[in-house]
Image (cartoon, rainbow, N blue to C red; front, side, top):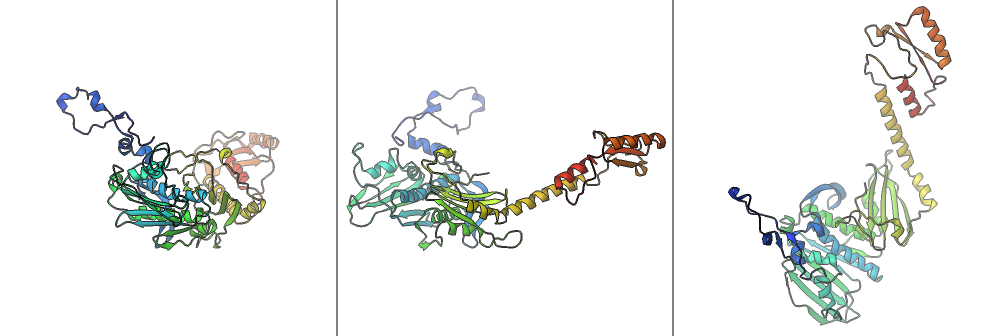
Length: 457
């Protein structure tokens, strides 16, 4: 199991300076290879389990109290974000186990470095595990294969408290772990007659993340995740620091991103929305910054997808797999999703009429015009080479080039007639080039056709 005292061969990093006069002396086998418990190994190599514990700066969506949903540069520690998100997603997952769950309460206190996440879904059974002979909750949060993310949060916290009540077994449970799960209090089990709930309260060990406090950036990122839950967890009211978040479903959540945004004609962005089935919810609108996507797989924010549309997707997937501990990119093949997202013709028709196609065409024309302008630039060349069928004037590109004339003919046969005439007037000031058929009407031609002709001439 995850936290049994199993042996891990972990190469110890040498921290002491080596005597320059004794550089040939090798470290002893005992110093190179040491016994480590799984707990010690996790603390020694955190990046293997929770991602990097070094500060990272990147462009991300956050929720700032003064401006709302905001895409800006954020400096945060992925490992800290990971342990917070594990507890948050666990609360959201409880909705899938208990359809009667209606509320998630999140509390983030930067001053005291305390984070608490509560939900009123079905409580964890307060009963003894028949095989391990310990209470199920002790087993989940300190041993066994279940609750992997919660255990990681426990390990990287100075204090971690679990409270739950199970109506089925008529008992409540409370236990606290301290000092990176090194110490624990005795579990408090009492008779209970109320409704089910589960509450996880923890104090992250900021020293493990090279931080002194929960700063503005990480709090803004955690706040955005609270809004994510309000939008992706159907039928659940989300409270943040005692206040209900003003989000009623996924469509309402999308408005946090697109409100007050206008298209290139000054009209408010139109959002195309479709609830495909109980597992798929999709929104689409015009994007001003190329392709953008906000997506959730079982309430996990899958942000790493790297175009003219802005896509929002909320879906439920059976046993999703990811490419890293931070779970930004799902790797599960579509055939294993457990459901299909088949958008209706109505959705596609609405999408084609919301300005996206016009925006793409305008962009294509702009790119083509830019290329055409480059080819029409007044860059001077002394000699032009490599153009098939061009018979250039002998003085072209020299000091008499202004006196030269290029004769353009409709085709090869007309070129032959022109060349025969050069036998009389000479080739010094006259060149001949056959066009590909009759002269192009540039008013009706595409940018590509014009570009091709200009490139030849």
